[in-house]
Amino acid sequence: MLVAVVSDEQGGGVLQPLDPAGAPAGPPEPVADLAAAVAAREHADQPRWVWASGAALYPALLRAGVRVERCHDVELTEALLLGYAGRWGEPRSLAAAWARLTGAPVPADPPPRAAAPPGAGQAALFDAVPGPPGPGITALTRVYADQLARIAATGQPGRFRLLVAAESAGALIAAEMGAAGLPWRADVHDAVLAELLGEPSPVGGPPRRLAELAARIADAFGVRQVHADSPAELLRAFARAGVELPNTRAWVLRGVDHPAVPLVLEYKELYRIWTAHGRAWRDAWVRDGRFQPEYVPGGVVSGRWATRGGGALQIPKVIRRAAVADPGWRFVVADAGQLEPRVLAAVSGDARLAAAGATGDLYSALARDAFGGDRGRAKLALLGAMYGQTGGEAVPALAVLRRNYPTAFGHVEAAARTGEAGGLVRSWLGRTCPPGTAGFGDDGMVDPDAAGDPQSPRARAARSRGRFTRNFVIQATAAEWASTLLAVLRGELAGIGAELVFFQHDEVIVHCPAEQAERVAEAVDRAGQRATALLFGDTPVRFPLDLSIVECYADAK
Image 1: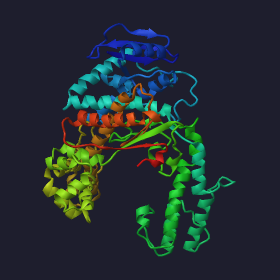
Image 2 (image 1 turned 90 degrees about the horizontal axis):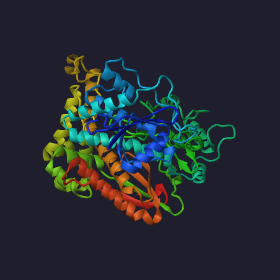
Image 3 (image 1 turned 135 degrees about the vertical axis):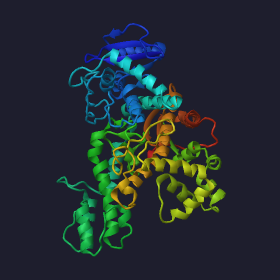
């Protein structure tokens, strides 16, 4: 069953039953209490809800205690379909999609709302949206029917439907995880900060440890003061010491022999913790013992998630010591190891690489098969092929890979050549990369002026785009596998008292009662197997998950 839903500013709205083609299957049903109406229909029929934007509507339902099983997110689907058509960057809202259907001027998408932890300070059930009212139920149902037709017209409609379903489920999971939050001990967080940074400054400046390091860095350069958080000042200080550097990135500094280097590296690491995950961060994002970021499914062009505030996807391991399960509860932490190499084995159709992917350690199997047992060279070759590393030690290793696994090597090479020529590449399910501009002519092909000069800016831009498209076909498919795993796992966990509380690229955390931990671990493993089957069918490639049952996130292997 399909039911379209729109809300109004008074907490009511309209429900509209639909047939499988998206046409109305009955009259629209105005309701005064939308949350109650959705809850009743969900309990009776468990329909697939069709709504303009889960990010806008679902958090309000969660605050009212209403959860739904399935949805079709028009905004997220519109972004996927526009990308598939090579129209990246066009507005994707329901209002914009409706305007395109009717031939009206297309409005710009509203700017993202200011980041705030879910549930923080909202007094109304459904927040009023500034400006004129959005399109109503007729627009929503027409746009949905149009999207179904456009999905059916894609090259692989079955795969694209799975992509849409996983993306829409991701919107539900993102809102639910933001509302639930990751258990967080403020006292442990403060203790970690005190251990790393020392006492806070009484006048609001850097804490004691940073101040001490800054003084020692100045002494190492033989000057009174250096602002160690300023790359420009550090570059000048090194230049005065006779060391010319292109930048102050860690990998550049590690190649420099100067007494200031280890101090600068330590300062940079601690400064990042102080500014990104210090007490101000905790005060903003941790409430009632829960870290509540705002997740953005598909927020990266490859389909990986992002966050709008909170920095959930860059929590340093030392800070994870503050993520502690509730008393009597545990974290089940699952990490998909070697995910992208296994994706290449599955999508390329290279039988020899797929055989290596059927083992627990793909790199070791690769080493035994073609690299004389040298796991390091095997890993260097495979990562070099996927990320476009073409120089140094990678050259002979890549030659071995090309000779022994030509189908897999050809898969990423073809994606790179397409990107260099200005073309678009797609993931396994159909997510499409954004078009390139720099280095390409008006027709999207490589500018002929760049072809004769491999060092011209346009030629370098073309090669850079080739490296991007080479990895896009793998990373985007890996993101699809992870999103599908999440969607399946959400269903597996229904009714057993466990909750998804964290997701980062290929790592997921479930918070559950201690007595349910083993059962949850089994559910996670099943979800991984099911995700593999949904995407790749009967493939020999395994996608094993490293599972840990821990009380503290930092203790996960």
